[in-house]
Image (cartoon, rainbow, N blue to C red):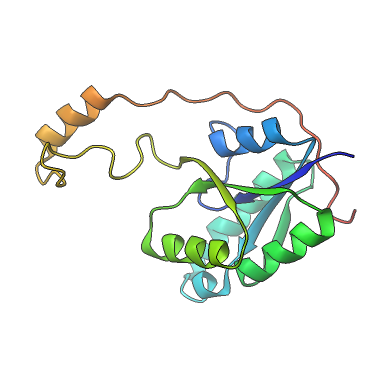
Length: 169
């Protein structure tokens, strides 16, 4: 029996340099790629943001050979439906640090869904570069020096071909 993971695209609408996607591929025989249109975010989005998102999702879907699931709804409900439909064993994401994203992830995890978080959409995750006393930098030059000394991971390779069930299977 094959294992299936869900990869939930959020801010990271890319295949290249996506450690969370590589983790999902490494763990599973098949990966279900999904983007959830969260009504709470969609209501606040302006015309240009919606147009940009639509074009980005079309490009991502094309790069996935038409296998991207784009579903509108409350993330907990959508994920539960997909987990049940595909008998998925895990849900992979990149860490989100925005206040709404953190609260959303807590709601998802509070519903019993475990999110496997790998990497983030940033070169260095927020909170990693701090002053010796643990506070945030307020001046750029000392921050830049600390950021440079911290180092950052180089881009990860793009995934090779991977198996995806078709959206209708």
